Length: 301
Image (cartoon, rainbow, N blue to C red; front, side):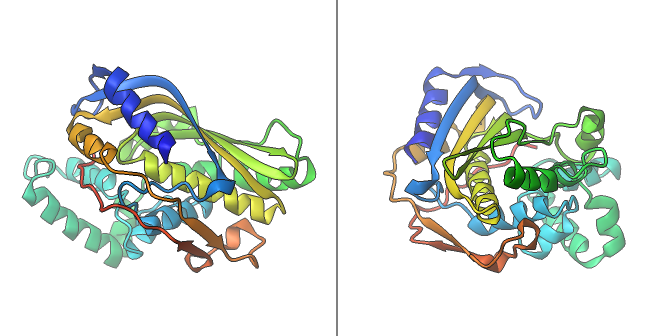
């Protein structure tokens, strides 16, 4: 994952310190691109452990058009918890009792997540993230973009319109109430010589915590779409708007850069699945993944 290390180095050395919505502060660059040939291995960061189970379940959640936290927490995936939890605290006037990231805040979050799992009515009210990725991919103002793109790749592979957008301007304010407007805003497929490539445009990128997940997620999506369309995988191209390191991630980024990259793993997909919407978690097997240990860092909410 040399490409990812070069991005970390570029931001640390050439980025500009600036404020941000969360109040944490960032070091940021505007405009950057990485390319990952998928024939060389599955692009999963090896200089710290990435929770692949979360990557797979989150992507399946997007593909099914789901926008409620319940599916994720029921499967032990906690990467989306902070936003609906903080929204619940704000909306129920509890935020002052539980300052962000305090021990009390974390204890109360565990109670919140458990109630999402156990209480359907509570999950419907407080686990809903708004019209985020799954909604936009599958129901963009009534249109199923993902289904259309799969069909269009099969019937018109030379099309330059193989695009899916999560940035629905008419619903941005609603998204912001319960979570975040989409950070990975649009992606485009490209077919050449029987190979499928994908380019993602990401408007805002938490490079230490989020980007390793984003790389793996869209690489996996490319592999899945290629399989159901009868194509071989090509490249995953990752293009950024505001790519940043939060100020409380600088030391972790330097620690990661001190580690040596290891060989990329491979990801085996059940070849019997020919329908994108039929994939299950059990259809994916990660092989030969030997990462360095996880590096802990706080999410900026």
